[in-house]
Image (cartoon, rainbow, N blue to C red; front, side, top):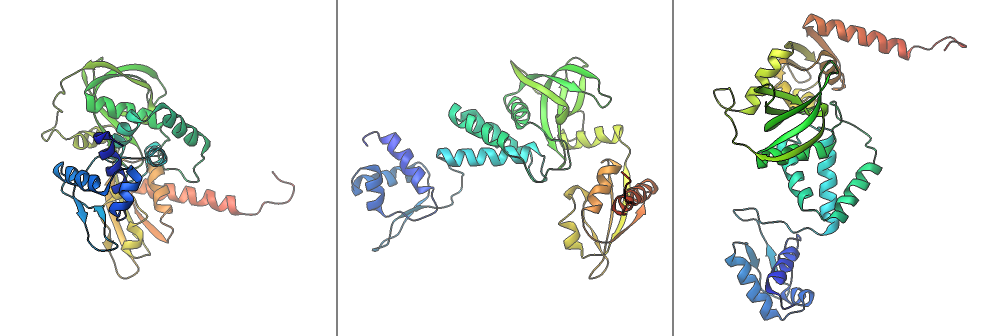
Length: 328
């Protein structure tokens, strides 16, 4: 292999495997001499890659953590595995998969060869997940198109379905994607309405970047933070629930089964804790998340939550009761 740049890329790819490589094995893999390997290692070090060398009969080279993230070189199988994993997380809005993951997916899909994009889509379409997130399912392509437009500062066109089912066409300047753990939202400046808007991404259809660039406007908040704008927007459109619940379980066990947006729990002893928080999430979603904690609990308020839990509990009890023979 006489092409030095190509050889360096191949060498870097081998070194990114978590093991120590003897110089003789690297030389055999790249069809060069051990002396050439030593020179290439020096070149990688000059480029800022922290390659360590150990001496002795079992010594060799390995890439260690440095001060900067080096470009990852992935083979076909690794690229497909990462793309499928990111797509699954983004598509079901799993808690903890935030905008950074969507940006990573957008970057990866942008450079995937067509044959690998086809493999990712085929695998995704042929797979049925056993569990789903609490929010609506989103086509990952929708998220990656929006994320790319945010990064490139390109205007977006898309169809949108409002809460009442009314359909419309929108043209907007996308500012940020916001993840709540159960749903994705787009904060954008709506060009037709000449005002800032928050769009639920699961209601967006056929988004495409127009290629028209824009200079981002300032958000109408003191901090200019998209999350702050989103919270204010939601507070205007949804009533706030002030939740007060006591769980008959340790705080750490309950916290592991509740969404992070609910905040901290108040320990009440070794086997009890209390949750007092506020949320703009729907009554039905809150009731579901409380039930999924899988322990005894008492809801002190608000009254509508207590009433809803009673209604759902009675319905579940009827569903579990045996019916007389011959009745449907």
